[in-house]
Length: 90
Image (cartoon, rainbow, N blue to C red; front, side, top):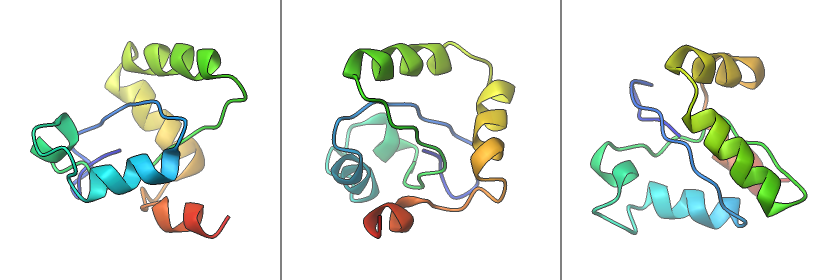
């Protein structure tokens, strides 16, 4: 997730992506990182069949450089559009 300027990147994991992104967009947790930095745009996501795989991927991404994270986003979403609405129609 990122903000409207694409200047802040947030990485997380959830078994309920749609509801979790909704929480971020609506600042359900006002003290959270995403609320504080206005990260309300979903620009990258990946599905895994096992939560253990998702957690391992999250840790790897969090430990990666900003440039690597930008490459991940660019690989599926070069215009950095909000992908949330597309999730709702899948």
